[in-house]
Length: 447
Image 1 (cartoon, helix red, strand yellow):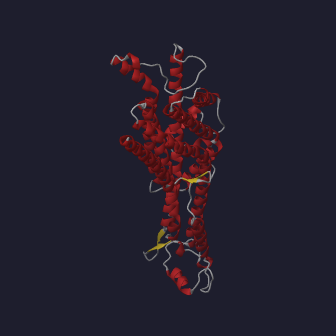
Image 2: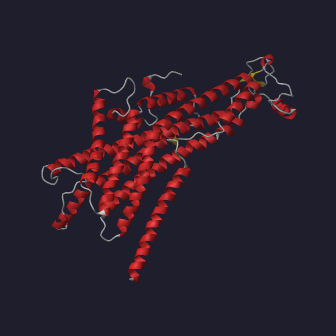
Image 3: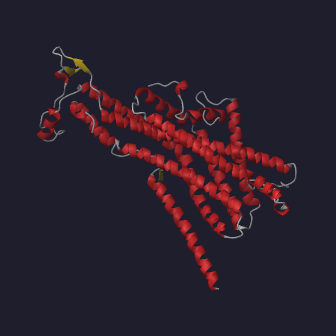
C-alpha cells in the first residue's frame, strides 16, 4: 500500500515538530536552509563540548585521580552523545521507510483492542519522565558553580568563591578573567541545554518506534487468534446460517492417506468441525496475516539498523560510566573528596542506567509478543479451511518459531537478560570497592 509523504507521522506526535525544527529528521524532499542551520548549531554544541573535554585531558591532565576521572567521564559521555546524534541524523532514509511501513500497517490492519493507542500513551509518559530527569540533571551540572558562589557569599566565606565553569575545558588563555569567563559560561549553558534536549528527543523517538513495533505484533496476535468473523444471513426457513461464497466443488479435499495429514484420525477431526466461515475467507485472512508479519519483519530489520549505532554507543558509554561510578563511590568514601563532582558523576551514571533499562525492557516486549505468534496462529480457525489454509498455517508456524529481537551490532540483544548482566557487573564492581575499602580500614586500625 502506497503511503503519501504527508501521512508520514511519528508515533509520538510531540517529537515531530522538534525533529523538523532541529533538522534531525525532515520528510521528503529533505532539509531546507533553516533545518540545516538548526542542525549545524546542534552539531557545533556536541563537537565543542567533545573537543573541549579532549583538550582538557590531553593538554592539561590533572594529577589528582578524582579530577582526572571526572574529566575522562565528561570526555566519554560527550563522545557517546555526539555519535548518537550524528548516527540518528544520518539515518533519515531508514527512518522514513520505517514510518512508511508503520503508516501502511495502520491503514490496512485495524486495531480493535487499542494496542497502538496504549503504546503511544506509554511513549508520551516515558518522554515526559526523561525530560524532567534530564533537565534536573542538566540544571545541576550547569548551575552548580553559581549556586555554590551564592551560598558562599551568603555565609560570607569569600575563600570558597571561585570562577569555575560547569564543564572543565582547556583554553590557551586565561578563562577566569572578565568578560571571557561570562562569555564562556553562557556558551556552555547554551550548548549544555541543547545537548540535553537533543538527547531526550532522540531517545524519546527511538522508544516510540520500539513501542509501535511491539504494538504491531500485538495487533497481529489478536488477528491470528480471532480468525475470521463469520458473515451471517437469514435462510428461507428463518434459521440463521453462515454465508458461503464458494461452491462445494471449489473446496480442496485430501484423501485420508495424505502424507500432509498423517493418519485418518486427525483428518476426521479436522473435517468433522462445523464450518462457520468459508474456506476462501479463512485463506484471505491468513494471507493478510502473513503479509502483516512480513511487514513487521521489515520494520524490525530497519529498527535494528537504526539502533545498531545509537544504542551500541549507549551501551558502551553505560559500561564505561559504571567504572567511573565505582571511582566516584570510592571518592565519596574519602573525607577530602569533591562532593559536587561526585554527585555529577552519580547523577549522570544513573541517567545512563535507566536509559539502558528502558531500551532493554522495551526490547523484551518485542520478544514476548513475537513468542506469542506461534500460539496465536495455531489457536485460530484454520481447521475450518481447506488444505491451502493448513499449509499457510504450517508455514506461518515455521516462520514464527524463532522470536524477533533487536540485536545490536550482532552482539547485544535488547532483553531482560542483557539488563541483568549489566546489573551484575555493576554490583560486582561496587562490592569489590566496598570490600577493598573495608580491608583498608581494618589495616589502618590494626596499625
